[in-house]
Image (cartoon, rainbow, N blue to C red; front, side, top):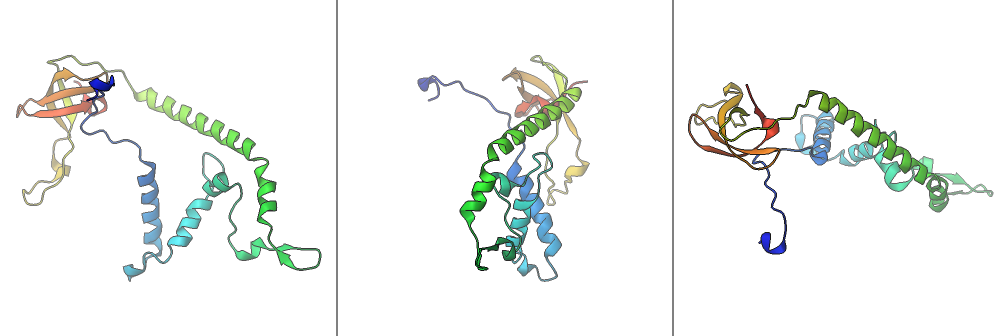
Length: 202
């Protein structure tokens, strides 16, 4: 099917997890919920609005702004009293359009600043990673070690923590510059396509 549409076929590794911002936030939310949950865990959802507000208004370490401010152009008020705007006749009113106009004028500069800060952070992170990274090219028939990903199985009395960290394998095919097909030397069983980050050589 791919060839009929003149598409390039890309082979991915069998197991190659990547950064997942959603799961990272879910982990933070779980920590926050555990902080508020008492003995009765059926009440775990009662504070979700407050926890969500805290996440949305927390200032990000890299950007210097909260997600709410970057999305809406102004910081949500913690209390309803902060919405109060006194008119000349002494009455209280809230003019959302005026508030948005005051903050909206400088949002272009804010976005530019945030982009620069993120670009600097990504560049510094890449530099730190590349200090430890070494290019690796494997040959068919070469003996290598593959990182062992296993799950514990109580029925078979198998604990993943006690399993070997690496498995001795043979390279049988080069899929791409970063992916190789390996075979377990001991069992002669194919281990599928393996990303180079999970492979080491002696």
